Image (cartoon, rainbow, N blue to C red; front, side):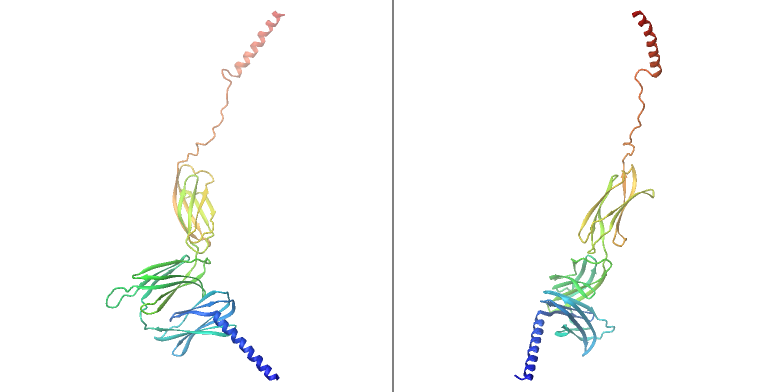
Length: 369
């Protein structure tokens, strides 16, 4: 075989291997979901194997022109994993019409897949439901989902909707939960808890997507930001002249690592203050913190303030109440000892008696002699 044929054969073999690798990659890592509207875009990929150096690119196209593009880089993805990326378009004055979003995925610089998502802005059929309100916080998210009213009847048209609730850190969805086949016949409140730990004083986004299949497949999405905070509240309080206890409950996925402070006052004078460390609490956790006063509080009416101090030193909750004590502090006082006297006579009569007995003993001794 000539040298040219050998080189040609090797080149064909290498090309076939590369095509085989790319084909396998295309099957083992895919774009599984794309959504875009005039405000935002999200793209979900699924990987069946471990991959590195993944690039996702989204382009917003109007009348053949690319108006804006977003790019995401993923260092690595584990086997059997979904990753969702979210970005927001920054169009100042969008025009009404038909838009197209082009999504591409590359691995190690090689293009593996392209997908498109189309939507209309300014005129489109009603999707059947609308997201009326979103309230996210450090414990979870609450929304109100409402149906549209049928034209001519003035009554809402019931629909079934599938909901996705996403918690987003930066441009990456870090937690997602769903509600399936929610019947919407009127304004319907829905809520979900975050089941991941959050960082204190960190900015997150939430995203809610509603999908309906009747009368026509449609998807709507809405997003809202929030800043995570630790949150603990007092739910029960007990106090008396001996001590006090407070039950506190967590209302945040930011771990609470603060204190409970008990302060006793009387006529604006500080009587006692006890600062007790709380166990770490998150949403749904509760703990009772018990303390004992240095000494029993004497009879009277006192002010009691119980404060929950958060991770940042701020007051998360406070209860003001009173302690009514009837404890008599003098009841346990030790009485002063009193001197005892010899029963019947004192020291002077006793001395006289001894002298008299001595004098009388002399004559008696002489008679006996």
